[in-house]
Image (cartoon, rainbow, N blue to C red):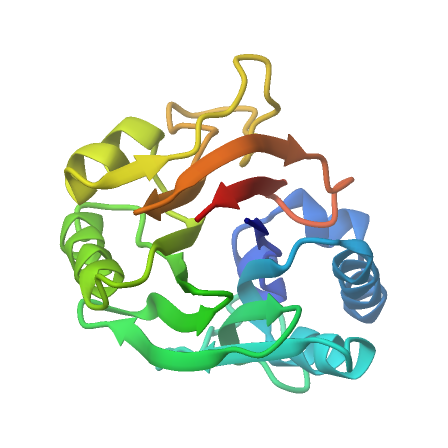
Length: 237
């Protein structure tokens, strides 16, 4: 049994480029970084996947969590500030896995068709854990196929996929195919990616398993620190 969580913490440059309310609520990015790190530090999950982590945020996490293993992968694409100069010292964008205990990296890759999205896979606690962030258009089909390959590459281990899939539960399930199960949230669960307009799903962050059972999945409000809320679950291996 392991506990897991996934959270897109929102890269500052993306927030400012796309006029996200977060950048208005948190004009001081250093203060927001500290608050994100403080929230992660309070989490008791054994594995936490984080998306859209800036280099500054990663440095903060490593400094504040010396008792945890922090795996990271930097995307090939560097976010470009379009409206104002970035205040970040390291504007790189990372996928991150925060693990209570040892872990071994299996693979880390940007997707071939999007250098700003990808997957980071490790083994820990007798399972393969994959942190991911997918593109929000048709490219996700091939990216989901690649995730299925990664999750099935070591069939002797159960696999857990955590991340921002940028699409709804049914689309993810149909693309991954048989053998994969997506944790089901309660009907009254808060959105994982709240929106006030548009037709896109508000439930795009998922916990997916192969060879395991995901249970007790919940969405937790992150109090405006990001445009996403945190999803947690318990995995029976």
